[in-house]
Length: 123
Image (cartoon, rainbow, N blue to C red; front, side, top):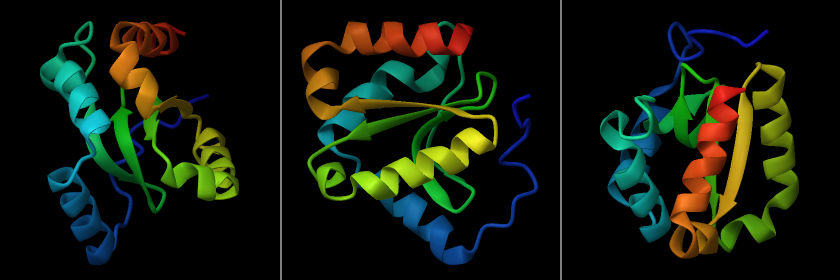
């Protein structure tokens, strides 16, 4: 069973809050493009938050109603693949599903990325 209200009630230190705020200001071009498609409940009425702190991690995009985390991976993720695997395991252990998409996918097939998000959100 998925954890509900995962954001409500969690203790987040001030450094993580500032980090998330900073990441919102300096989003990558791929994150910015995907955010434009997700914001304001544009994707089938699903509400996404960007740069959401969950379990000490900063998730690129989070939809509470669908228990879904969407991560946009660029070149930096190639160097920290093991850390991403561990992070995904923690989030999955909380009942969240994690979808990882590459920057190139967002730029070349945004419609396909959106379809994958919708498919996961509906399951």
